[in-house]
Length: 184
Length: 393
Image 1 (cartoon, one colour):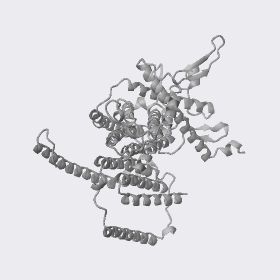
Image 2: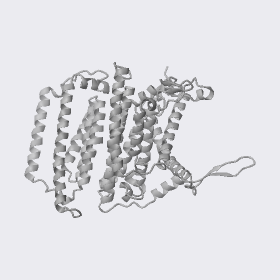
Image 3: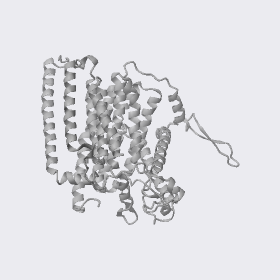
Image 4: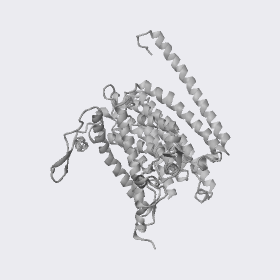
């Protein structure tokens, strides 16, 4: 039963991921990415981590992808603003790179023994919120805190970038004078 | 010796029955709620409200006789028939896929999230068969998180409906609505975190058991139950305010305030698709009120114990009993509380004026989020000093 779930969820993730990169319409692509992220949640459920699965859907589906969709909707790109269709050469290159990644993955998995690989026995409480957070805040607390520093750096970077962009637009408005529209 | 009932009541069968029951009851409450809203609104404003489509009750009293009318009670049915026969208009520029997906994305996450609400006692001996039934559709140990995870996907319905309409006013309204909903989801989530820390669990049924089996304080003439609204009053208030914003109700009904702004899906949708959006909104109201009742108002637990005076003691729910009468009583307590909170929402609608959009964002980010964070920190500190080994264990 969990194996079937993992196979189905894996197919869903791969299919939705392919649709995400091939769709021309950005909102549809974002929704496909949402499906892919939900599929990753299902994969985690198959790996007996319901807490991680819930967090995956809650954070990626409920928060991050909402912001993505939000920004895409605010930009409201028209067909002619989306840029040219990628050339055949770059498509070929992308296909070659994905095949390369796939073969490396396949090589790695087959070296591990593939299907005959014995999964470790898990306790009954594995994957529960208590079990997960106990590990996160004792054994892996340093790694966890380092990740938060990384996120903080990203937030600081966004603020710096956003502020400078904001300034230039303000200056442009000043040049254009009050009451007149800024010509960009 | 296993009885027939015991063989019949397997997990899938019971799950199916409970699921059909919950979705059926919620779909029945929605028209009732619409009628109640219109009638209560009319009553508060000194109007009559809907009074043309009457339900006739055969009413035979010796000496009086005749028929009794319930004014306007069939109005929701008439509305539904009208919506079903309306012409379905699809805008020329609509994104067909998202246009069709929108109403479903708005309704189904809410309907799914209802599966995690405990609507009755957690151990009912089903019809005396020895099979112990947990009165909620989906018994998972992380139900609060899953409920928030799934109900937060309801935003996509509004976004898809606005974008899929293919014109700018629905799009702007959809952006406005989703900004409001994700802003208030933050403070609501943090308020619930404080409640989780108090209970020491992420299971909604554990929330209710925690509240139903302990007393908060004995005032002498009255013993308050251990409801989180008493031990976490600030979190309850934040949740309540955020609930109004999440449901797009007054005073936060910016996405659809009739006089000034055009709503997202209101602009282009018609007929049954519009009805599905509307159904989703009312189902979300019921979901949020049930969640508030479950987390802060003791869920299916009664306000007083079974040893209270006379009829009060009989009405109370015994959180340890397994008999059917007790299960029905627990469900009635839950429904009564949910209906009370729903009426409270309607009442507030005619009490507070609407906020401006910048005021709404200021309240969300500059008042509610800091308050909720402070409350969470205080809860953590208090939990450490009161119970250093582990909160709620």
